[in-house]
Structure formats: structure tokens, C-alpha cells
Image 1: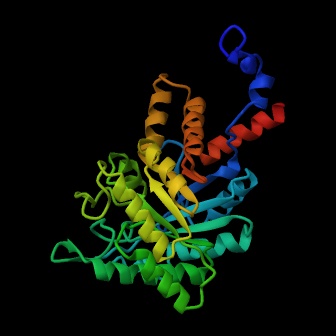
Image 2: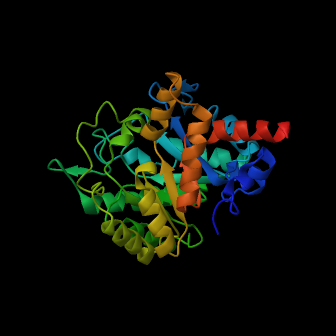
Length: 330
């Protein structure tokens, strides 16, 4: 059946019909807000390359977490910037470290908010790499041991989910074994299973305090942007090692990977809408090229349409605020 009998525009005639016919719905419940917490700060400081995002202090982290929960966002993912850095990233597993303290504070004061703890060393090493160096090269086995210690410290602090992000072979198996050994069998692992060596991480390195020391790349352990079949192998290995959720990072350049993983894997697939993707829209909006709210919504809906179960995005708070305002108007 074709025109003039078939008229698809009938389902687009009014705002009410368009709302009624929506296939994909996006709400704050679909989003996860990343938070940077700086051990040496006494107040929040805006990140220059990421307008609207801040390095927070332990003094105001509960207030920030409370606001996020009130907006209907179900979870945060935490990144720490310590005052002490060394080759091993030793402060990352300090039970009194910045993230360990933040986890305890948030879970005590905002228990309804899920706390995901990013498990890596890059913000804690004095060279900015994801683990200790030996003779100038990443020491893989020593890195796995560090991840075990970090994950256990987060578990003891009360984290709801452990998220290893280093893309080290065997990291899920190592962490799962350590958590189970210490009777944290209930604690889920969200693995950065498919993490590409992307050009879109630059603002994050400034936000995480590694931009001034990291001068190399992570092509040794992150995936090449040319690879797709390898992504499915990485995801399957992490599932076999005990990952409960899988992540694709970055998001927008890898919609095909998210879509195919959704069809192939039995685990929930999350997408990380990364700092460079965020900063580009902010810059374009500031230049009057795009509507900021519309551009972010379009990309976030695209991620849901591709199959993302949840989306980590620096725009979570701003989206949730506008979402609440729209609901009040209707």
C-alpha cells in the first residue's frame, strides 16, 4: 500500500500524536553522572575544557550527590584525584583515600543513590598510565594486583558496583577472584570491556589530573579504532571471567558496536558518552552552531536506540533538570 492511501505523516500531525507514537523514551533514570573528587580542594572548581562540570571536594560531595538523587538520576560513577601520586598509584587503594571516603559519605547520607567506583590507576600514578611501570613499560601482572587491592578497598568502603577501566587482559577474573575470596560475592562488576584508544578522551585527562603528566597513548592495551570483531571477543572474555555488565567507550563513534553487542551478549550493555563528545557539543552550542539541549538529547536517544541499557554522560544533571522543567509544564 502506497501514497495516497498510506500517509506516514498522519502519525506526526501534532505534538500529542508524536508523543503518543514515540518508540524510544529517554528519562533521567537512563543516565549515570560522573563525578570528579579532588582530595586537595576545599570547594568545587569548574573544569576549563568541560563547561558545567567540576572537580568537587569531599566537603561538598554529599550536597552534590543529594542534588543528583533528587533529580531522579539513579547512579554516579566516581573518579578521584589524590594529593599523592607515585609509580604504583599506591593511594588508589588507601582505605582512607579520597574515593573511599566519598563512597562512605554518599552511602551514609544518600543511600538510595547507586555508587559505581571506577577502578584504575591513571589518576593516581605520577606518569598517568593505567598501572605501574617497569623499565618504562606497563607491568601487566603488577597492574592486575593493584586492581585487586583497589577493588577490595572500594568494596570495604561500601561501593555498589566496581568498574575496572584499564582494559587489562584478565582484569575481571582477577577482581572477581579477589572480591569472592573476601566474601564480596554479591558485588557486581561493570567492566569497561570495549574501550577504544580514542581521540575523545582529552578533556577527561585534564579533569582527572593526568593531563599534565601523560604524554604517551594507551594503544598498548586499549582497542584500535579499526577493530569490530575484536570488540566481541573482548566482551565475551569479560563475560566468561565474571563481568555482570559490559561497557562500550566512547559512545557515538561506536553505535554499531553497541547495537551488535546488544544482540550478541547476555549482559546489560552500557555506553560512556565521553568528555570529548560532551565538550564538542558544548563548544558548538557556545558558538551558536547547534541547540545544546537538542543536540545532547539526539545523541542520548541514539544511544538508547542502538541498545544501551544505561548511559554515562556528563550532561546527566543538565538533562534531568530540563526534563523536570518539561514535566512541570505539562
